[in-house]
Length: 221
Image (cartoon, rainbow, N blue to C red; front, side, top):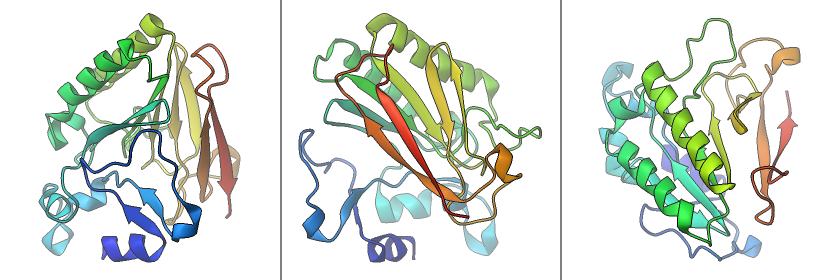
């Protein structure tokens, strides 16, 4: 069902290991665009809506985490479905560490964007929709801060799940929470509680100290 919904909407779901060449440009006349599926908590639910693991997802879409490069940006896509990275798929943490290490000296990589379903911090007072292991969060933040400080290259992380559009910066690294795209948002519009989507732009010519990343927030309800 998930595959049908996405492909009917125009997504060309890219299998792990079959990503387009780093300098390729999607053809808008092809009728579809490349899509990369980052699993969330709902992808871990099984029979009778009981949360288990990502077996159903991996059977249909393959490995739930990956890294790839596109036009100077290294993308690191993570699986946080069970509320933690190590609990959802341990091997993705060494993958992220290696991807950042390789990007430090790779002149073709100008910046790094990390995506996971759960944000490092829930902007709501309840803090119920963030990564649960705070030592794990500190590890992620240290990795991204150290990468930015040691290279001068931009680093940012994008999450969702909390249903409140929000951004905070920690030592120059922005952490964005996406708005809800389908279900009711959490909270009132003045604090980011609306449905919508975000159109991102990356300027590979700019380093971490300049405006290398822009987010055009498209609220619709």
